[in-house]
Image (cartoon, rainbow, N blue to C red; front, side):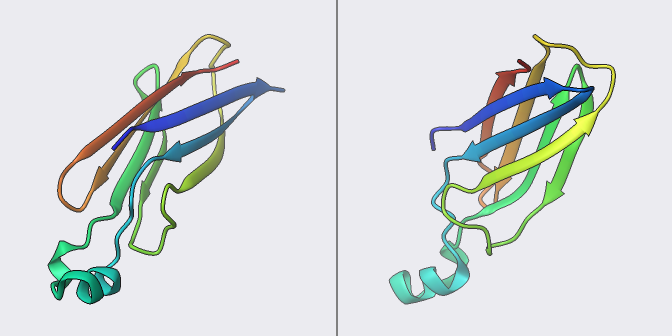
Length: 104
C-alpha cells in the first residue's frame, strides 16, 4: 500500500481537504468468489486526520467504499498556512496507511 495523498487549502478561515487513500478495498463478496473465504476481505475500517495534535476528522468505514477512496472534508479552527494535516487509516488486517500535506 502506497499511502494517503493529502491536499489542503485555507480560504476564509475554512480548511478544505481532499485526500486519496491507496487501498484495494476487497469486500467479503469479492473474497468469497475469489478464494472461497470471506475472512480474506480487507478494507479500510477507520480513518482520521489531525492538525497540530487536534483531531479534525474521524470516521469509521465499511466495505462499501471504492478502491482507492477519496475523502473530502472541511473544518474551521485556529490553523494557518504551513500547518500539516496528518492522516491515518487502519484496515481490517491491522495495517496502517499514513499521509500528510501542508495547508496552502
